[in-house]
Length: 116
Image 1 (cartoon, rainbow, N blue to C red):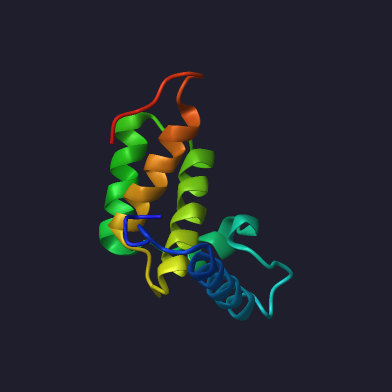
Image 2 (cartoon, rainbow, N blue to C red):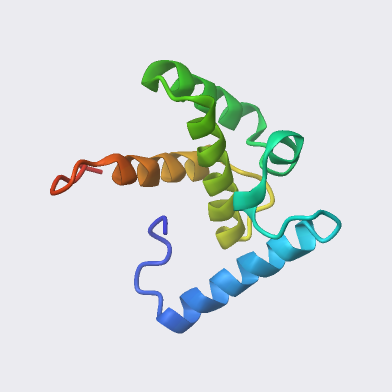
């Protein structure tokens, strides 16, 4: 996803996804949720905490890009998933930047691509 998977086989990627799913399963074993996408409110703030640097980055994005709180939450959820795919405990600013790139790709008008 972030360049480290370049040249990764389908089997290797499948294994990484299975590991990320196992991480999420263990993390949420006592909650009525299974995936990062189901996080909201206090659970989102607890399990997808971006740390001080990541929080500053997200707040800056919120102000400079005019992101809604819904977009903010969606970026946090995706950042948590990217961190899980890397086996990272903490969400980093690199995970947030990658999640924002995917969000921008989703917003590209049909037939247009964003430069990276």
